[in-house]
View 1 (tube, rainbow, N blue to C red):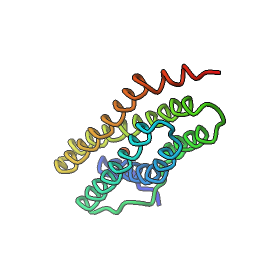
View 2 (cartoon, protein in one colour; view 1 turned 90 degrees about the vertical axis):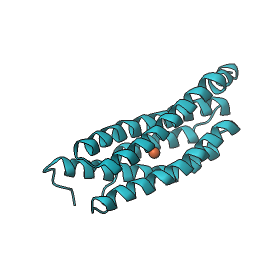
View 3 (spheres, rainbow, N blue to C red; view 1 turned 135 degrees about the horizontal axis):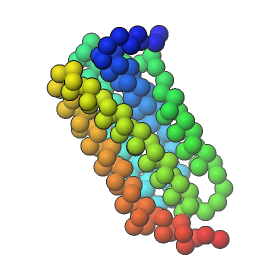
View 4 (cartoon, rainbow, N blue to C red; view 1 turned 45 degrees about the vertical axis):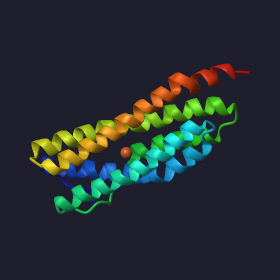
Length: 168
Ligand SMILES: [Fe+2]
């Protein structure tokens, strides 16, 4: 059942549900991305973020219970599309180093999508006076930003160069 948007709290809950679905989809996708990575550093980055994502799902559940709502009942279409693009990269033929570079791109699109929603959610929580939720969302936002900058470092300092050098 779609939620009726009759107040900021409802918008907050709707976007929380969106992220809950997004994170859960990511829990399934990250192991596949790790498996597809050739660089051991990239594989480790995906596995580390998988662990963080498990914690992020728990944080969302905490927020839901603190405001007496249940998670679920909504599927994030945007994450579905982003993950689908990741799958296309995994299935593509070609140089493994180039695939790593493309996987980083797919993962950073995911991180930016999450950062956008978590940033918005945190602003809602602040306006609604939900201090604990605000803190939990800030922690997750920090993790997403770190994951994103770690991927930028990996791309800049090794993977993009390797991909460039292996061009046939
Ligand atoms: Fe996340």
